[in-house]
Image 1: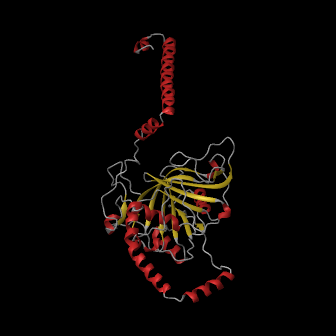
Image 2: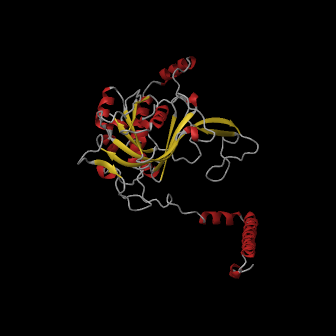
Length: 404
């Protein structure tokens, strides 16, 4: 192999040829070393396991730091980076509640033993002839696939007392969304897309004549709450571009108000191979919301969609949080048989996943596609002079500390 002296060649063509030769020689050397290592590790599998365990890449997610704050500390824990969904902490809470359940179970068993066995047998014989009426469905085995799904059934007491409207939705809750834009905005087509995205939504233009009255967000919220709307969504336009720059969501009638910034907005018709959405209620997937602020944000998105999705539509809305960026996607899915040329699905350990050997899921994106980031959470509706907000961004100084 020629050393660094090859770069002193004056002729440009010969210098380029020599550079390509050097690069090809380096690639062939690395390839020979890789093949030699593979042959050695085939004979010694423990060497491969040791190398893979050592060569774990370090990412910002793996180096994520958490705040040392009590999750039940009240207001001080809302903006802190605490893992509310930590399975270890939840396991300790379950173990603490098990002794009380065991005592109650022993009392019930004692009462059943006092019943006459003859009467018990006669009742059982009579029950065998009757068909079971309300049988509970069998419990579904947990999936072996790695999951980042947010448990929206988890409602910490300090959060549910602070945001009772978001965490204590009534039975049969049906969202009703009023969509508008910022003052004198031209994003009418984009706002109409949101009506197709959020079920039971209506778009009302906010733009009007230059000399007409400009309604504030509080006045619009009062108008919407009097007509039984549950949410107010405001699409903000960029300063010198005809594209969305932010999304404000108000939980009616008294707040809170969430301010999101929007980037990389792509309408559905500009996506390659896109599909057309139907009027079915979509399923909702919430991933990566782990802190108290993240759980509140997840419950806000949950309240925007009906709790009873229409499965026949095969539509799913995904909100995936990663490093405080919320990626929004909407797909239509279909289950099909595995083709002969496709590989087998593997689990975390690299082994074939049980129950998914011959099944594949196909996805077709419907759009729109965009990325959001939470900027501020206001206590009431529309930030006013001297108002105390629940949470505001730009306070973090460490790159490995995330808010959601």
